[in-house]
Image (cartoon, rainbow, N blue to C red; front, side, top):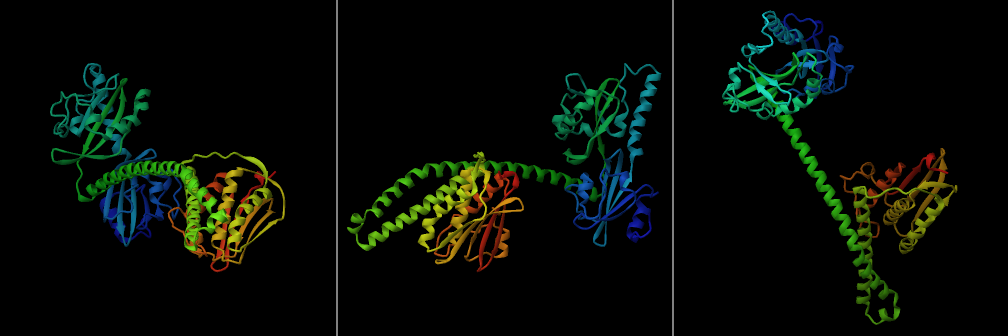
Length: 503
């Protein structure tokens, strides 16, 4: 065991843990990653110990504590498998050695003591009349008996530390210990089934701390069944040394941090849900007035006689209003789709349709914008077959892809849409000859936390929602989507429809 161990660790073992037999020593780095170990991990851990794993995954009791930032810390009477052990952590040359020491015998001494006391009382035929745990206060135990209604009654001979608690100034106090010590509410729920089984055994809680009478008290609870009665024992431990106090404080701070994080997460989810509902409602209600204004502008711009009555400045102004209203309507529609996709307010309605027909519909929709920028749109349908899709949503995804391609393709260039079979799957590829993207932009393209909004080649403004809607729709279908791009050489989006959706 001592071979190849650092001198500092050997000295610690000899000084603090004699005799050093049946130990497990695990070496971890500053982040708690396992490097190697000495001893048999199976004696203490229910998982196979592996190099490169986090020590917290193998020893949940160390969650929130590791990595240790102190020279040496200790955890006592931690239950691992069928053992109760002490855990020591020693810092050595930038690493930490975590030492597991079997203390099962010490914990079982309580059981032996109780058994001896019970046997003495049984021999004197007083077991039924007298309280069986009369002397446990000498070991700093407070004893509560649980009646059939689930009420805990403090038993005689309460220890001195309990009588310093503001709720237990007298042994006749009827205060529920679950109210006086909130930690016990969780422990009581954990052992409720154990009490109902009524088998003579006991369960031990984790250690926690309480502050009263101007001092920190470190406590542990024991639930036991005896003579068809349920008992709850509380023991106060006297902890010496700053390291142990710091460790317990770390436990408490970690618990509080997790509670705060959980509350913040819940509040954030509520706010996000409210935001999405608000966006959905507002965008839905805005569509009607936007469409009304756009309808009037369209009538004006298509009436050559009325337009001829206006000078060039007014004509340009009306055309500008039309362009902006079209952009606003497009943005509003995308916002509406995005909000509803985020809220999950959509259900795929699958139908069997010819894929080439869906592509042709999307191409027809894109034709007007292509003509405005003198962009050639090439449709290459190499195979014709039916696919099982939600036609409306899939068409929305294709429209968004083509809209992006037009936006980032310079005037006079070309865009192609290819439909083919590849390895028994269907492929739809939308390729442009535009400005392309950097590797970083490709890597974060569908990341909602990144902003990838860019002006088009003719100054077109984007909403930043189109790609998110595409990804949501493709993911909902359980299809794949891939992006290939190079700056200055264009971008290709490839949708892969699996064989299971082909007819």
